[in-house]
Length: 341
Image 1 (cartoon, rainbow, N blue to C red):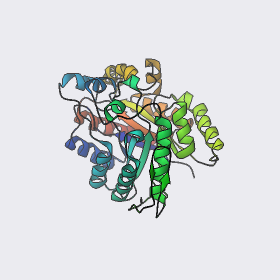
Image 2 (cartoon, rainbow, N blue to C red):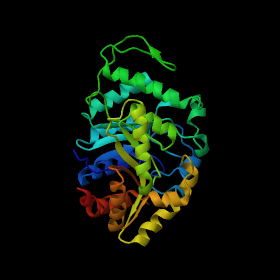
Image 3 (cartoon, helix red, strand yellow):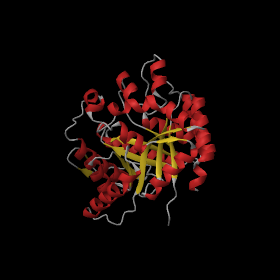
């Protein structure tokens, strides 16, 4: 079966424009316009410096103009809220940072959200941002950075046991628990689809062994074929060569009636991303990966992504207000999405 191109949107859950009303407005607007998924992301501590260098909601202009304490709404409670205010659109986290969380509690929460949403959850998982991006989650929470990759694998395997076994027990390197009963189980079987974020070799390894989807940032269309093959080859080494991976991209979007306007409303935000993200992408990589332009220009760029095998888009629109966000959502839904349906 040919996979469908799917478009998801990052909700205003961080930064100065984050609010209950904003999340509700954009969620309902996204569902009404026919988008496929609503996405949140996951940090616990969130500092002013991160607010200015890891801009995943709104724009750098908004951050600089509003002298407000840095806001970040927690991911799993966000998803539970979304489950209640929407009815059809999928909901997802890109990505839940497993080293920070007790996996028994996290497994229970994830299963419950899948039940509350009637099986609409996509579970992205990851290891947490590196220290070079000004992330302080590990230090504040007292979690070791050096073992975050094996810890993530161990925690996920424990969670999977809870989701799939009537009387789960687990004995791992970082988490163990005796036989017990933990319900409800997820609606989706054997559990919600699991996508791994991050483009580095360790993240690809986790995806190859444990996941069915991959959602990296800052890879241009030309870069995807070789990277997808790398993922498939690694999966085959784990005996999972038959997995038909959902391939996605976490991508910045600025759409307007003219190319100049789209570039202008995105330029300041894109300029700060070289500091706030893993591997410190350079400005050329950021531009090469982004969807910046008119609906026609974005459609042409998207066709290159689709031809390279990328079918899922977790889109981070750059916007100056919630009204501006709704305006761009409408323009994209009218001028881009029909070209891929």
